[in-house]
Length: 156
Image (tube, rainbow, N blue to C red; front, side, top):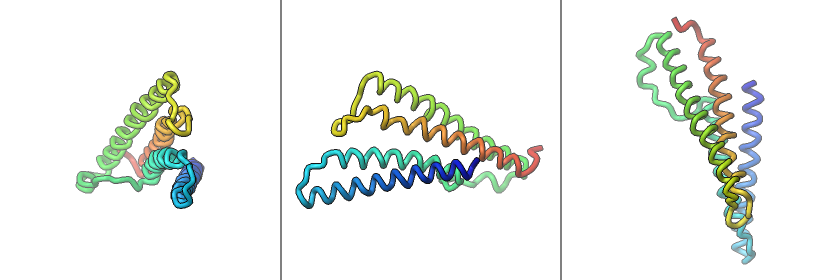
């Protein structure tokens, strides 16, 4: 399951990075040859937002995110496992409440209000859809992480 999730996430990130780089290159090229391509700036910004959120979900999944390991070394094995599960639980709660629930409401409200981007005229709800999507990926990774932590040994 983790390998499949990693493969899907990295493929999305690489595709979005390609879109971002190509749109930025097109923007630079169009300025040199005095072409009018106003959509490139907006496309670069939106793809950067998507890369950032999917990338942060991936970093959480492969445990390459920022963490402070001050308390953990001084704890017993059982308490260290409890602390890891607590931390994963807090991240899961954040991902569920803020990214999935809050992000879904934000996407719904944006679609309902009919907001569109200024240059590409794409509904902004499609841009903000990355919030619940990255939240779902983060929750999946969190569940996988908790399963791995529990495999490390008994909590008692």
